[in-house]
Image (cartoon, rainbow, N blue to C red; front, side, top):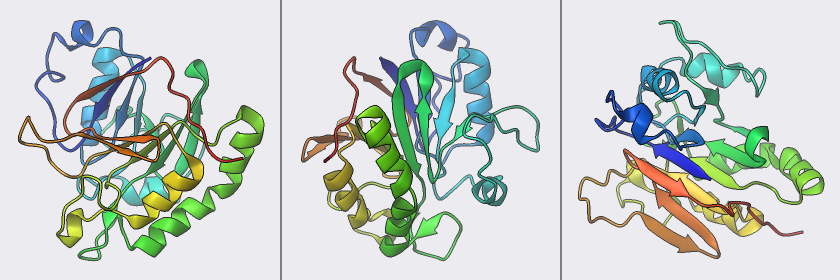
Length: 227
């Protein structure tokens, strides 16, 4: 399986007439947020691939409407400027049937100025707990809780910053210990230095900062989790 991952900054490699050829073998696209909705519309139009995304703490157009209106997991919502911008998975779990893949989204950053898409650690943990029944159903039905956790912010101590805005959530560590996805994909911390570290390992879970553009290739992408 090959997944194009994007976050935080648009990329000229994607905003290019050569993008359909460059990414022709990508199965779908995951975003960790902080990108314009029209970027997702462009990706879907040019690549003809589904986009699954969460919000960051910037570029929050349509935030209130989408967060309040959970609707169908299979719906392809449209935005006020016209067009379609993908599958909204922030605070949701989605099984991608065509690939038998379970993804869960938890967007937003640590609360730092009382803006939208910002949470205390306790609030983020409550968001996780609200999805507990569906996680248990997945375990019973599919043999695992989830495969990929998509967040905007990192986990505490694993690629995060020391300032409050970029500090990671400790509750993510609890979640990774308990539900054991194969991957946690996040953004928020910009990797302007091409030599900056992207990947971390935590108790068998691979955490990847997908800032700007990252290709995830794995033919054994299923998660685990405790019984």
